[in-house]
Image 1: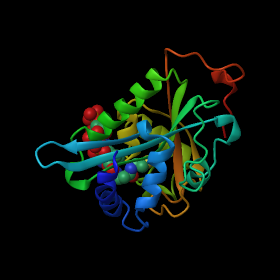
Image 2: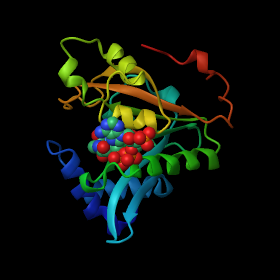
Image 3: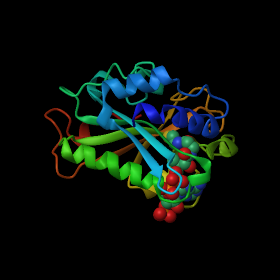
Image 4: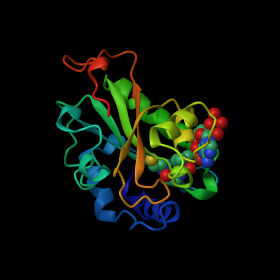
Length: 213
Ligand SMILES: CC(C)(COP(=O)(O)OP(=O)(O)OC[C@H]1O[C@@H](n2cnc3c(N)ncnc32)[C@H](O)[C@@H]1OP(=O)(O)O)[C@@H](O)C(=O)NCCC(=O)NCCS
């Protein structure tokens, strides 16, 4: 992502999250200043338009809880918690594709780009919080972890979680309040992760010791 992309990124944000305030140019500049190589855009070659965007930062996950909110994980969207020295986890802060470019493999390409960054930096894993906007319809009838299991087993399809699962993420557990205003997801999200098979866990972070709720 470069400065020339900020306006287009704001427009994509307004289109995919109509009830949220779009990222400001200052916020996008903060992401860029903290970690330029972790901010990805895809460009539609025919028109030159920005079609999708993926924001990432490196976090020292021991400083966080598994059910921390998006606001906590991104230090209030400042990315001030980006820690390339002690961190071993690439945190996916956002992934959005413009509605007119969805279903063309762009989220997959952006996820692949982030995965290549994890491999190049020899990080242990990627972690994120997946919205589950299909859950709102089931909130009265299904526990959130049951919903996630059904999406994993393809008994149910979720417009966002299914895409992440198809793109190689695993869903670990449901958490509440990750994006408190996400009404479609009834305030719930799924913790998702991808483990880099080429990089062993850092000492004290063996997989079986990951906290689960
Ligand atoms: C979720 C999102 C990023 C997916 O982007 P996309 O570019 O359309 O996804 P892709 O075309 O790369 O699809 C990737 C995989 O997910 C599947 N998929 C994508 N959208 C899907 C949907 N609505 N329902 C079911 N599966 C879907 C695709 O079929 C594909 O899998 P396959 O190749 O095995 O068939 C996009 O819908 C979006 O921007 N949503 C709004 C913003 C948002 O909520 N972002 C997530 C924040 S956690």
